[in-house]
Structures are given as structure tokens and as C-alpha cells.
Image (tube, rainbow, N blue to C red):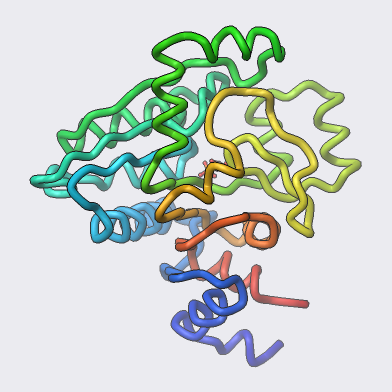
Length: 257
Ligand code: G3H
């Protein structure tokens, strides 16, 4: 354990990369639970990784959350100069703080980079038959097909229970998540410690299996409080190329086992 304490950022990044078969692990110094500035650095690191991977025409699917919102705030017009970038929200997601919704994040990214975007408005919780009808709507159909053909997926990872509370999930759902020991949440999926999906929101948008079709999948999440959630997601994700995190989360996540 003492060895871990002394571990530098570079060697932690190497360890994450090889342990979880990533093409890259980026660790920014600090703990975003304690400083908004660190969350901003996570956002910046995401943006620079994406920038270097843009080709002529690129579809980027983004989720919501405060980390994604930080990434959006650091994007500049030079991000996509001479390129054709289209941002699409990965999920419908009405229900969270409007500033952190995927729709808002995608719109802000497009605005900051002179790119274009699509919207996808659908409640976070819909009955199967309403879902089927919504999927017939041309605008929704278009957004869904763009999500499925996204070149780059950029998403956050949250703590299961805090995300369920943020979504104002019904008591029954919360206690089910608790009894099944939900640890992580990403784009509406809840995972246990082993990374098994234990529940998913019935909404419209990115599915876990869609990740396989993306050229690059980037997940961004930091803070010591998210260490276990990130580990659970790393255990469960069918495809993750780049993890962007902070030092505090990386320590939590590598610590033990
Ligand atoms: O899915 C998880 C959330 O997007 C994480 O949100 O970045 O505000 O912690 P956050």
C-alpha cells in the first residue's frame, strides 16, 4: 500500500492502461471533488484528445453531466477548423438540471466550435409503447441513427445512487439499486461492482452495444468519490479506448484488490 501512496501520475496511468486494456489513460493532478478547477482540467484533456482524432466529417455523441458540461465550456472555434463536426446528444434525458443535459452539452459544443448539432428530446422514463411510437418520429429517428453511427462517443460516469437520486428515481427503483449493490451509472445503465448491468432506464438513445461501432470511446470522470464507480464501469464496459480521470479517482481505483 505504501508503494501505491508513492506512485506518480505517469505510472498510475500506465497501470490503468494495461490493467483495463485502454489505448490511453489520462490522469490530471488533483481531486475534482474538492476543486472545480480539476473538473475543468478533465474537460480540457477530453477536448484535446478528441481534437487530435477529428477527420473530415465526424459525428460526436455526448452524454450529459457536469464533467461533460466542463468539456463543452473549454471548446473553442479552432477545435474543428476546416472540419465538419456534428454533435448529437447520446440520450434524451429530460429530468436532470437543464444545464447538464446531453442536449444542452451538445448544443454548447456546437456553438463553441461553429459546428452543428441535433437535439433529442425524450423523457428519461417512458413506457415501451410510447417509446416505440417516438422512435417512428423522423427527427428522433435521425438522431438515433446518428448516435448509432457516431465516430466518437464521449460520456461521463457517475455513482449509481447519486445519479438515481439526481434523476428523482422512484423509491422502489432506488431500493432495488441498493439491494442489487449498484455502483456505477453511465448513459442510463446501472452496473454492480463486477460491471454487470443490473438495470437500465427505458429511454431513447445510446445503447451499450452501440459503443462497439464507434471508432473512439472516451469516458471522463474524476474525484475520489467516483473511484469505485469508475472501476465498476471499467469492468463492465464493452468498449472503452480513453479514460480521462484525476489523481484522486485513479488512486481509489487502483488501490486495493
Ligand atoms: O452518467 C454519469 C453522469 O454523467 C456523471 O455526471 O459529471 O456531473 O458527475 P457528473
